[in-house]
Image 1: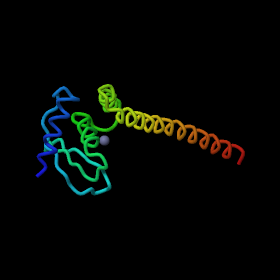
Image 2 (image 1 turned 90 degrees about the vertical axis):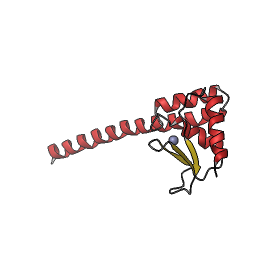
Image 3 (image 1 turned 135 degrees about the horizontal axis):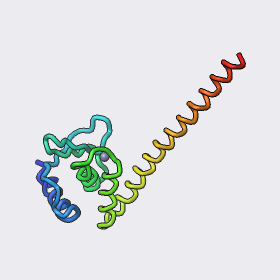
Amino acid sequence: MDTDLDVLFDQLNNSLFMGSLPTYRVRRRKPQNGEHGFINDAARIIWICSSPDVRQTLLHEMCHIGTVGHGRLFRAKLRRLAQRGETWAQAERVYYLRAELSMKAGGWIALWEFARDFKGGLSSIVSG
Ligand SMILES: [Zn+2]
């Protein structure tokens, strides 16, 4: 049984989320794609897979309750955890922030590349 994980969920909900989260069951399962854990909102279950740090993985998934993806809202939750003493959450927040920034930068670079190629295409038409 995984009642110890359910107890951990309650403890973390009370100490770090001010008891604001709805109750989810926490269960273990084999990873499908090497994931540490994932959440099933419909069934209200958090699955812990292959995690080097169960507590940290559980907290990450708890931040996903009501928040899909690792965007601004998710990062705000990580920031709150960091403010409550979870120093790893700050590093994780920066990681996702960097990922999002590089994605955006990637978009601009792709646009620049497109514009450059389009211009090149035009000039080859004109000169050809
Ligand atoms: Zn996640």
